[in-house]
Length: 247
Image 1: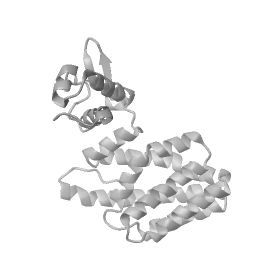
Image 2: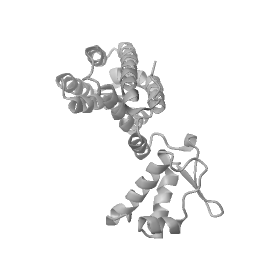
Image 3: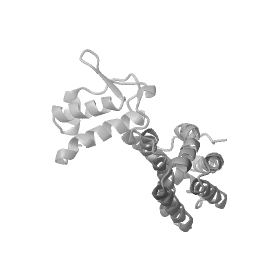
Image 4: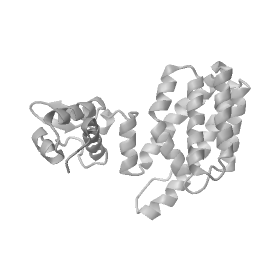
């Protein structure tokens, strides 16, 4: 089907090809169709196809060679924090292995972010964290509202570190965080025990207790990981997938 939409054509072609790569329709090492074939299939110009391939190359998904054409790179070379790559992963279906790896990364940096937020955060930073927690607590049975507040709470902690790398990292994985929160709350709203742990994190940060905030975040991540494991176990039989249950 031809791609339409003027200035949106390149974005549509990039998304279409990127989504197919992430979904495994083009496997690592496989060559993409030639420019002329893609132009015919998608109803776009060579310029549009070349720009789309250039964007995919920038995300680490493909490599371009005049002799060998455009080949899909091994997944280890993909920019896993790229927002579009993460969104394509989500669109391709629940990937338990990626979610498991996400929690490993979160365990590495979020407790430390809480420590820095407690010690370095300004009064305005702390007020924002407190406000997002209050919104989370007030969300009750409203899942979408709760997910948005939960994400905002965690991103506000990154912002309060004053560390540009933490801030960028938090923004980069926001799509993956939203997915994990959504899956965790699929069965029910955020469990009371997890809400209390959010409260502990918030209280420690406001008290400028770095060690306490760090410890509370570790406990929160452990609890959240268990909740996600239960949610995935519920999803797997319904979808017929072989999703791994997190320990």
